[in-house]
Length: 352
Image (cartoon, rainbow, N blue to C red):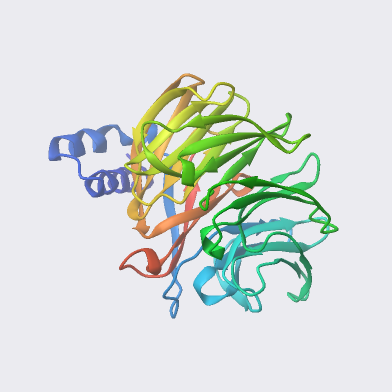
């Protein structure tokens, strides 16, 4: 066995220990980890001076840049994709959350719940704020429909001390607001969109349900209760198999739902305080990023069968990340505001 494969086994074994499994299970996992191991740790870069929470990422492949929303510092942090070297901080945003990089315009779209609550447009060359989008104040989660070139934002709600939330449809190039859909809930989580269909799926956390929205009419066409758990926040989607991946926090579970009916197909224990679920459509895997210091990994065998793989050690508070399939990389931010750990940028090789 090579040194590289031995290291993979050791990492997988450590992850199982962190997940609290028995010594016998640890020995079995060490012996069998290599055929199912999904991620290999690469870089671990400390970010000194940061004490709060990070939110979401965006990536500029051509410019070799990684953007990270530093929510509690009111900045965006810019890193080199390859090395992870910190390039600069971008000031002038208030509590940034969601990020979208438009490669053809070299612009970064940033939602924020601080400052004036407007979504900001940042020039990728000068790093200056060059515009704002007006909508119900304080957007957080976002989803981009690349086919129609429409950006969907979740605005209002508890971050803005409002009893209701809104789903906003925006042209990210012009800022045109096409309309807003009201949710009678102060907490609305992540959303995902069909690329080849007319549906938007929205986690209505405050009502413990998922809403299905028609893009054409901007209306709710179905609501599905999440009956087995509460606090459904992050969400991912495999459009090819018509499966949704929903993480909850009370208790910490990952649910696989039928995207046509809302029926539960499978469920697993997930890491606590999960704030991001990512679907790897190349390798047919789901990554659940949680604050307990490990990444939950689940394999999609087919649309109705899923398998839990050995968890992968990350860091305390490592609840958000971005998958970059072109580089076979997963980047994860560890937030000291969500743990007693350090502020760190972690990267993993996505094994094929």
